[in-house]
Length: 155
Image (tube, rainbow, N blue to C red):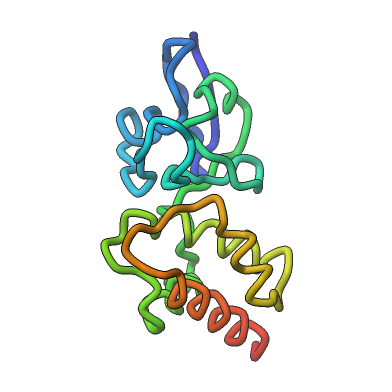
């Protein structure tokens, strides 16, 4: 079947099998390998992207379901003037280690701050609760998100 979707502001038309998952379209067809595929069960959250400005696990979405929709991946997070504040804060506050969960953490963090510019630590932890990080105790991730919120409040 033929689908057309917008990914990071660029329109793409592809012939896909009806059973193709969005994560595989993004990685294998479009070369956007920042979206990770980690568990086969939708538990890890490494595949989070935005679809119409809402975080979704792309391993649970058929590519056909994204037809006519807007998808944003971590490759689309950087703005005209450079890295997003969330990306900068993860770097400055050591919010990443191996980097496997990082793209999903960044997108989820950006969504959280867009909807709640001053979240509590409990709200941050709730927002990232569907994302598994096997390298950290989440302390630096929470610290990174808090730092991003603080920096954005200064603007």
